[in-house]
Length: 257
Image 1: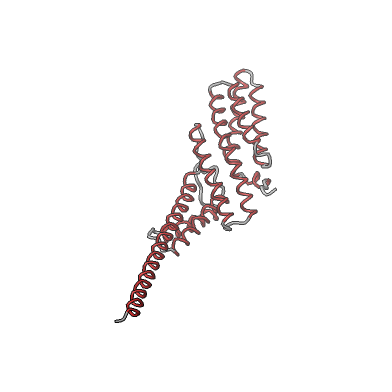
Image 2: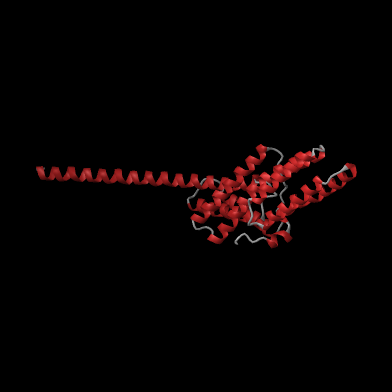
């Protein structure tokens, strides 16, 4: 074998080795990228599922539930395409069943009392995560601009309501203890929080109710007045606890303005 043949043979061996190494590296990169995508999608599914499970029932309107379920369904389909080892088919089936319940108005969730600053902060964190998720869905082209704007504004309103809920709970407790000045102050704080959502007619109706309640408390004199005020509180309590899901109020709300 002459020198030329030896050189050509060595060159061929080097070339084949380089091709094998490059192909191996490409396969490894593809494997790592696939694993990264699967992990990111699983995290996305878990975040949406957590928000759906842990956001208190009084804040989760049908629109927000359907948005979260939509995200879960999309994530499951992408995971199926990547052949995830997780039980994605079961996840998707459960999400679709829940979607039907929501659309049939059969998914009823219990409200949670916001009775401590810690609980208020935790719910606020959940709502902020929901805000980021909706932003991400919009940037990824999963929802249109109008839908994103409507729901982002509503979630911001819910953040304010979280603080107002805590102040209302404290005000009710002060009334029970006959600490009227503190109760009035707490209702003022609740009114201020709701006032931050000036473009939301539901928030403005809440502000009006709080002002009415404050006037009632300021006018209280004697036990008879206290009893009347307590009855008034019961009415206000019922309105406040259910007004997010009150059809009459929601018909007046237009978050696209």
